[in-house]
Amino acid sequence: MAYPKDFIDTNDLTKEQVLAIEDLAIAMKKAIKVDGYYPHLLRNQSLGMIFQQVSTRTRVSFETAMCDLGGHAEFFGPGTIQLGGHESLGDTARVMGSLLDIMMARVNRHADVEGLAAGSAAPVLNGMSEFNHPTQEMGDLMTMLENLPEGKKIEDCTLAFIGDATQVCVSLMFIASKVGMHFVQFGPKGHQIPDGGLHVGTKEERAEFGKQLMAIGEENCKKSGGTIVISDDIECIKGADFVYTDVWYGLYDDEVSGTNYMDVFYPKYQVTMDMMNFAGPNSKFMHCLPATRNEEVTDEVMDNPERSLCWDEAENRKHSIRALLATFGRRTPLNDEDVEYSAKDELHAALAKIESL
Ligand code: CP
Image 1 (cartoon, helix red, strand yellow):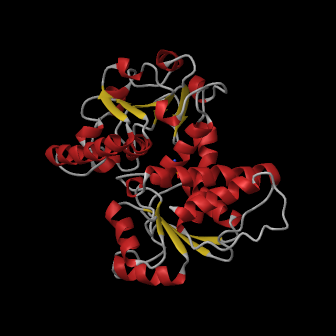
Image 2: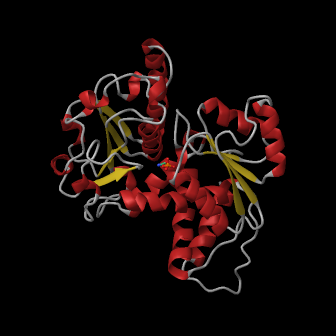
């Protein structure tokens, strides 16, 4: 199966395609960080960055990644371009797709990023919607691949997500099941993936949507050998290699709930050192960030140099987004014949793999 034009959802890719992008991300990270070699795979190209929501990591990662690849990026914040107002979304997509080489969008509604992709000749990358956060997933998988427990493959690892079924939680379930990991959500009833995540609608509509989310994960597991467990019993996190949490107050929450989140999640679902050690003596902490310190996670966990991966994970947003841009963008030749750098063979092999899939 060839790569699709757009990167909207990791479920549109095969396991091999996902892992090939991760290999490219790791090779380019080495080339740049170890040898200072910047692979200009998108020389002179333009990235348009559409943001209907605030962002630090995603915005900075896309902008700097595009620069590293020899291109440039332009930021379009909320209210700065016509997007489904006077001009239809399809018309905007058609025009922007002809002016730009590649686009990314963080949107209020998933249908908007799908609409942009449908109307644009240029590839569109999903920078987060209320449904999923696929660039976050790719950075997270890269971080886990770089921090595999001694003697384990990614397929042997358990990823335990603690808390609300945010789009990050749902996305982690997607990618973990895609690559054959064991995924656990430890969260309260009403906030579990089968309850519909951040989908807008009545309780029944959300439950119906939750069934669809679980069906996607279960289908992935059939192919990959992964497993999914959802529970409000802390026993489910025992043995987890990676313990992940997200905020209890999401960007999209106002529209789906008037819940007092402290009453629902605190203290049972706060990630503490006791919880980390209950998962396992070497379990690693992950968080997509931004975090609300001492709500969903304590300072002691977040700042623990032995156990916390959340800072590497934030940096890996850029490294993995660079590989996504190079995969979905129109690549220019490397022209590195006269350049020596230690990751050269690795980088060429990763690019050849991308080309072959
Ligand atoms: N994790 C993440 O998407 O961060 P930003 O909202 O800062 O982009």
